[in-house]
Image (cartoon, rainbow, N blue to C red; front, side, top):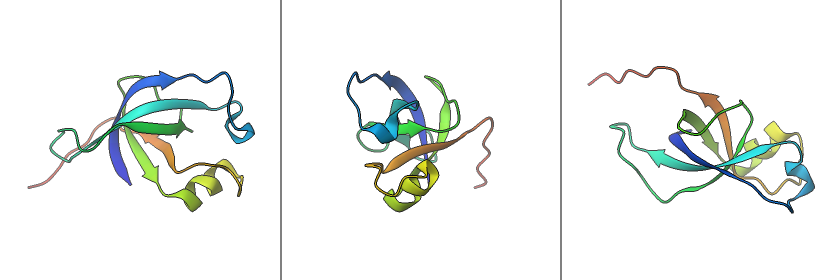
Length: 90
């Protein structure tokens, strides 16, 4: 699991049938201190996230396919939660 910020929607006129009815977003992974981690990438939204939201991101292919209920889906990253509040103990 990773924490990420939703940057922008990704709109495609042609997409894999597994993505029908699903939103996709460009997300930016974050470190625990809130600074940016790596490059941005596309994630499938399963929880009605929006641009600017802090989200919980699962980044593992077989679990992503399980959530989509499609064993052949070309999926690796799925938004599985919207973070309302987060506290980190030092």
